[in-house]
Image (cartoon, rainbow over all chains, first blue to last red; front, side):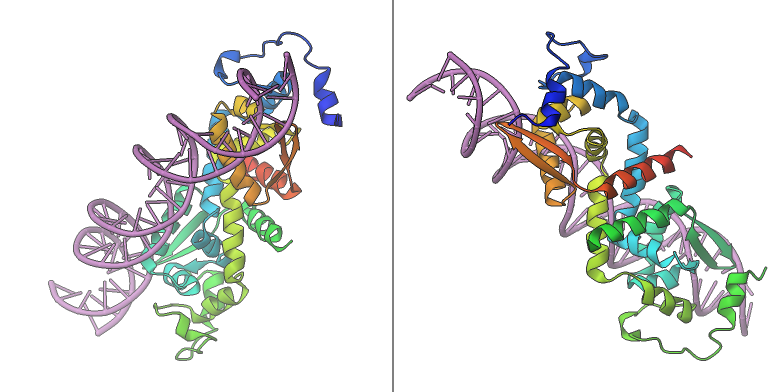
Length: 136
Length: 136
DNA sequence: CTTATATCTGAGCATATATTCAGATATACT
DNA sequence: AGTATATCTGAATATATGCTCAGATATAAG
């Protein structure tokens, strides 16, 4: 009945409530104040989480994930990308705009043609990781 | 002016159009048919992309990212999680439901209290990767 | 200069999603 | 039994998002 985790917590807060830093931020009840304090202490900062989530959101869309997968091998222009994933060039351009703004891809213009490529190796790793996760 | 990538493509399709496999799927114009064919050949399958995107979407939300970050150290119950990220317990429960359905977290019930934990190491890697990407 | 093409952009619509609110369920305590 | 608490759930609302459509921009070619 008493798990290791529970024992660990049990002898850490016998006092009324050790008053964590910034107790005013939390208005809801808590069962294990010390675990809450520890978790909150190591939680990434406000803006950091927001930025990371925004970055992940860019990759977390089927269309964009397909675009990025296609770009893993070589750079491609807009209409080629549209052909690869079977979507309108307008839609692709819209998505590429988001990816550009999020610094996930970069592009190079050659006359009328814009060639897009992955900007960061993190993206490749992230995609691989997600695809592996699915397979299991 | 002539990049390596362009030369690579230039001498690969001097013919009218080599007619890739499944040319019917693509109704839009394409400039480099051979690059399109190559990219399409290595593109992950339909359902695979959909699943991977769905998984990523679960992590790509500020609230859920905070929840998962908090769970990296130790398992936590719902109201503790609510206290950590400063959100209503109802909202947290809703999000945990999604994470549970997506097999990102698992939970263990001890009396009335439900302790949640990360289910997969992939999540930790993914979070670290995303947070690193932001820092640079 | 005029035409064609590759890409970009803004508006509009349809869908998805995150939170709140109210209430249901389940377990512990007396 | 009854009360209190921890969690869950459904409905509703507000916001975000992806695509299409129409048109703008820019460059190449005639």
